[in-house]
Image (cartoon, rainbow, N blue to C red; front, side):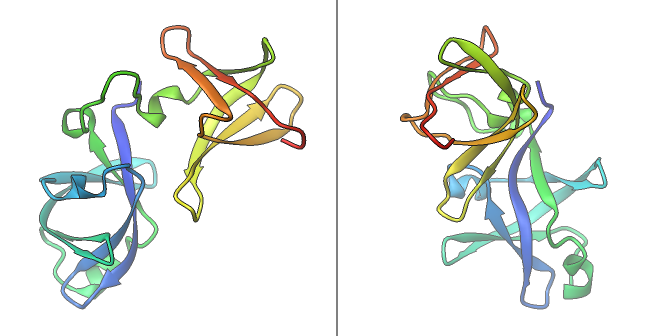
Length: 167
C-alpha cells in the first residue's frame, strides 16, 4: 500500500507570482480547494510544500505555495508529480479503490493470469488506462472501463479483464 497518492502534475507557470497550473489525476478536480499541503516527487524524494492558494482557470487548478513567490522559483517544477499523504486523501465509496493500490495486482483474462498491473496513466480524453506487463514480455494498455475491467478484487489482489481482438 502506497503512503502517497498522486493527485496531479504541475504543468505551466501561471503569471509571475509563483503560481502554477495543475493537470489533475484525481476524479474530483475540486479536491484542490481545501488542500493545506502536498508533496512534490523530486527525484524519488517526497518534499512537503504548503498550499497557500487555489483558483481555477478553464477548470484547471492553479496553485500557490508558501515560499515560492516568482516565476523563476516555480518554473523548475514543471512536469513534477504532486501527491497527498493517505490522511489527506479523499474518502472512498463502497467498491472504489485508489489506483496506486492496485499496482502489482495479477491481471486475469479468460481464467488465466496474463500479467501484472504495472502502471496507469490518463489519456487526452481523461480516460484512465491500465498498463499491464504481460507474462509473454509484451505490454497491454487496457482502458479502465466496465467493458474491459470486469472486477478488481482487493482481497485476492486480482484484476479481471475482458480483452478484445487486437488488445
